[in-house]
Figure 1 (cartoon, rainbow, N blue to C red):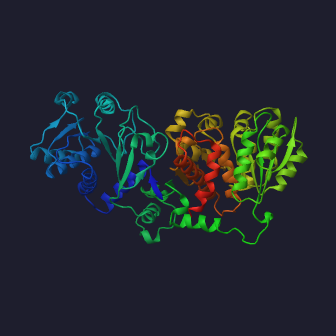
Figure 2 (figure 1 turned 180 degrees about the horizontal axis):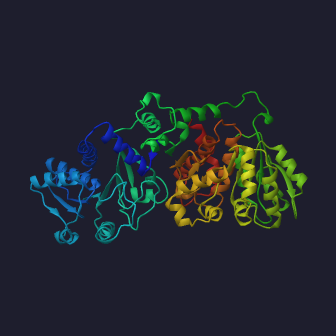
Figure 3 (figure 1 turned 180 degrees about the vertical axis):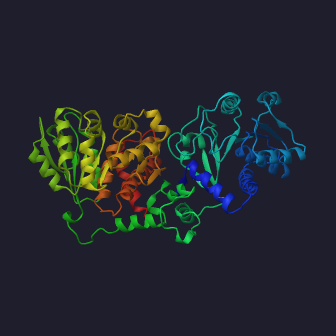
Length: 546
C-alpha cells in the first residue's frame, strides 16, 4: 500500500482553501475531525475508563476540547481536562463555552491534575498540531515530560493529528515530544510521521479522511491562476495555493509494493513480467560488481550472489585477487577479474564494457588502489551504476563531486547513491542528528544538487530523484547487521536489469523487495538471529508475491 503524504504548508493550504474558497465553516471542519477521533477512541475504551485530555490555545487544542465534549455526551464522564495557554483562537473559545455549559471543569495547572492522583486509562494529546515551529518550553514541556514519564500502570496515549513536538514536514523534534501509542491523523497523513524519529513517537497511525482528499483536484487548485477555472489550470501556479501542485509527490510505502493495485505497481509488475521466455544468458542482463579489497571479501560475495539470484544472466566481479578463491567457492557461477596492487585501466574498461549495470563500492576500502579505481570508474562509466559504501566515502574524502556530477549528467538519472546516515554526513557535511531530523529534505536536496537518485538508508529508507520521494516502511531491526547493504546493492543491480522506464520506480522496488525479504527472514528466524545472507534466501519469495 502507498499513501500520499503532505507537509505543514500543504495542510494549511488545504484548510485555507476549504474555509475561504469553499466556505466550509472552520467550526464544522473541527466537529468533523473531532467526530472521527471520537469514533476511533471509543473502539478501545469503556465508559468507566479514566481520561486525561490535554489542550493548548490553538485549534489543535480546540479539537481536543471537542473530543472531550463528545466523550462526555456519550457517557464517558470520568474526564479531566487540562487547558494551557492564553490568546485562544475563536474556535477554542467556542469549545470552552460548550464545555462550561455542560458543567465540566477545565483545569489550568498541571499541579491540579497531579493532586487528583488518578491512574488514567487514556491520555489525549491535543496540545500542538502542524503549525508548531519552535521549541517547546516551560509548562508545556513540563506537561509532555510528565506524560512520557507515567508508568505502572502506563496510560494509553493518543495524539490528535500529530504528537505534540513533532514537525509535520521533517520529523524534527522541538525539544520534547509526546510518545504516543496511537496518532489519529486528520485528513492527509504528514511526512514527519513516517521518517526519521517520527515513527518512534507516533505509534500506530490511523487515518481519518476529512475535507479535501482528492490529490488530482488539489493539484489543479495549486496550478490555477487567479480567477481561472480549475478545469483550465494547466499553467504554472501564481496563486497562494501553489504548494498543492506537489501533493502526492512524497509517498509512504507499506508491505510489498508488488501487491498494490495502483498504476505504479502495475507498471512494476509489467516490467518484471517482461522477462523473455525463450532467451539465453545474454538476454537477461549482465552486472559488474566492483567490490572487495585485500582481506575484505564478504561484501563482493554478498552483492554478487544477490545479483545472480535476481535473474541476471551473468555476473562479473572485479575484485582484489585475494578474494578469488572464496568467491569461486561461494558462487562458482560468477565471472571474476582480479587485480593486485592496482587495477589496470584496460581491465576496468573491459569490466565496464561487459556490463549493463555496475555496482561500485562494497568493501572496496579507501586505500590508494581503491581511490584510483573509484575515480577511474566515475570518469569512464556510461552504464547505470549503483554507488555504495567505500566509494561514497572516497567521493566525500577526495572531493570527487565534480566527477560524480559529470557522470550523473551523462547517465541522465541512472546513477544511484545508497548512503547510510554516517556516509550521508560525510557526503553533505550535515550532522547525523540533523539528517535524522529531516531525511526527506536532506536526500532531496542532495539529489537535486548532483542529479542522482539518492537512497538514504535508515530504519525508514528514503528514495528520491529530487522531484519525488518514497519512504519505505517495510523492514525490521534484524536487518541492521553487517552486509545488509551489500545485499541491497545486489538486489538493485538485478532490478535495473529489467530496464525500468522510470529509474526511481526501479530503486524503490529494489529497496522495498530487500526490506520485505528481511521481514520474511525475521518471521522465520527472529530479528536477533538474522544474518545478511538470510535476506538473500527470501528475495525470491518477496518477488513471487506479485
